[in-house]
Amino acid sequence: MSRFLFVVPPLVGHINPAVGVAAALEARGHRVAWVCPDPALLGRLAGPRARVYPCAGTADGERPADLRGAEALKFLWEWFLVPLARAMAPGVRAAVDDFRPDAVVADQQAFAGALVAERLGLPWATSATTSAEFGGAYDGIPKVAEWLRSRLGELREDIGDPAGTADPRFSPHLVLAFTTPELAGAEARVTVRHVGPSIAERPVADGFPWDWLDPGRERVLVSLGTANADVGGRFLAECVAAVRERAHRVQALVADPGGTLPPATDDKDVLILPSLPQLPLLERVDAVVCHAGHNTVCEALWHGVPLVVAPIRDDQPVIAGQVVDAGAGVRVRFGRVTAQRLGEALDTVLYEPGPRTAAARIRAAFRAAGGAPVAATHLEALAADSHLRRPDEQAE
Image (cartoon, rainbow, N blue to C red):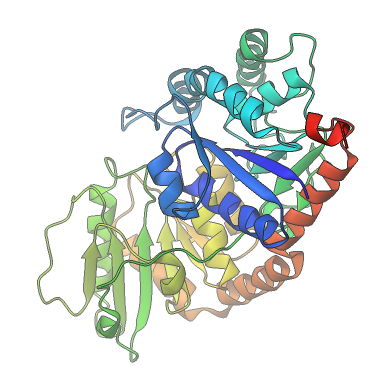
């Protein structure tokens, strides 16, 4: 049996796909450990029995709400991704020394995992929780692409192998893409293994009012993810207004972690909570309104649910474009959309056949790809091909 060390940032959407893969590996008898700057978050998502090595690093700092495009990307790298890699690197190295993995599984944004593995000669795989960069997202802005390469080069000098050449976002050994070409498109600039979404059971807090759901109305789930609580107030309010205009036939479940909306008491049309049990709800809703986060989009389409996407920043415009190009949803402008436009988009995905048909097609492709079990099989092959053996095995 092999040992796998998962290196992840303290972000829910990046941890969740890895959890399913780790569970599949453990079910086959392999040993799994984690490195994460937030052990409590990792334990909540992966379970209290997960072996977690702590490390330095924090979650994404607050960005100015009006940052978009290249400026938002630059902020993300300068104030989060690069400092996170430097902070995590000593903890990753200590975990490797103690756990002695046969392979490292590094999240696409946890550069420390890839660079430390490269420095130590360990095989490593990329856990790609977004497909936005596979198709050359920055080809049209070469200055941005060169700036990113420069930042990665500086990181390699500090924590990686200065003689190394691999982009830490894309392992030369194995890139696990939690999507399929039916959504991401067929053209990719790097070699990837399309395994489809990694969907694993998650703990659901007691007390959710399941009897609130009205079987006589369509149901819409509204979520902007966990990282956008500070910028979503206006958008969520417009969503609520759009649903209230259709309350005779539509209900909405709204995730409002920032408490930006007034509480709704005994409201039979709109349920507003700080968090929602997303996976079980996706089995029961008819449409999703979201920020085009890769995790939410793929989980919705795994269930064949069409989307209204309102990208905010980072990779979200690319993912929103994938949804629209695939025919599985409608795009609206996050910063300027009105209740009227949101209502029109909802009517399209709820009542026109095209988006639902496309969502069903992607659902079939996702499930055929195999998900976490297939990803685990690829990782087993990577570990088996490794020429680096643990000292205790060399003595056997």
